[in-house]
Amino acid sequence: MPDPDLTPKVDAIRKQPHFLGRLWSGFLQTVGTQYFYQTFSRWVPWLSYVAAILILLGSVWGLALAPPDYLQGNSYRIIFIHVPVASLALSIYFGLAVLGVIHLVWKIKTAAIVAQAAAPVGLVLCVLALVTGAIWGKPTWGTYWVWDGRLTSMLVLAFLYVGVVALFDAFDHTENQGKAAAILSIVGAVNIPIIKYSVVWWNTLHQGSTFTLTAAPKMAASMYLPLLFMFVGFYFFVAALVIYRSCTLILQRERQKKWVRQHIEQRVTFNASKS
Image (cartoon, rainbow, N blue to C red; front, side, top):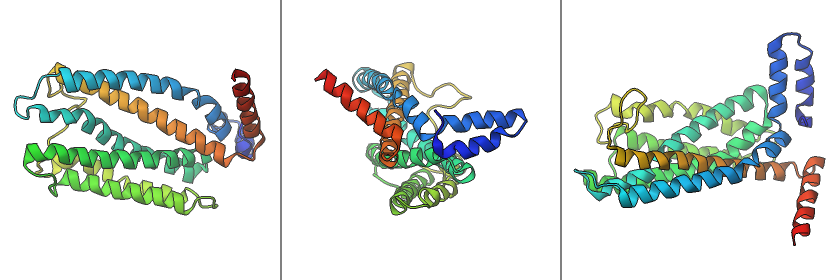
């Protein structure tokens, strides 16, 4: 069922004779809050199951079975946490910028809701990346922190996340909800390539990329395979978490609408029948 908030936009675009207009009207129907909830809420359990299996396999393989590194010994094993969370911190912020553009240009409310759900998750992952990186840096570099390009730009990313989360909270329940956070997300996206290429542009202590699309992995298979399990598992876990938070925000914001009341009544009836 189309979202009532998008009905005027859909009707206006449907009047356009060309194919792209009709295609865009179909897209608008799929991004409504009701359709998003009814479709993606079903994904959460399955994403969670896959994430749990992959993370369990990757952690046991990486932390217990993988051999020590010939230079770093066992201290390198923190890579199985550090690399996935650092990658996710970048990916989520890039996603915030894309969602910000969608929200500002096409006024799609669901984009702002998903961004609000994802921003705190990205902040936690960014802080976790900084902490695990510092723990890894002590035995590797002899210090927890250096002001090199990669670490400094990641710290800037953490502050950007704090700003985005604060703006969502500051403008909550107002007409400008999500707009200021979207603008900061878009402006702050300039930091993403700086983080990515800082190890190339500047002389830093931080090592280069472990995985690239143009070269073979710089690790033995017994090391990079569990890392790959952890990498994919964390992405599935974060996807489940963001979808769950998004659906929760949708129910909170749309609680006065008929479809939400009907959904809650159905859930109450279903739980009562089971008990």
